[in-house]
Length: 54
Image (cartoon, rainbow, N blue to C red; front, top):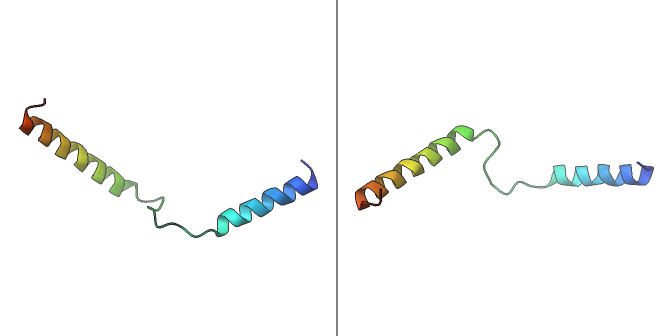
């Protein structure tokens, strides 16, 4: 890798690291994602069985 390519890669990395977060979930919120996902699965299963689709 040339010196200019290494410098450009380092500059890209520093720009990416300094960007503001968009308000999405943090990386440690797996428990909440699983709970919401399973709740959705249960609600859909209840809906399907109540409407006779299953």
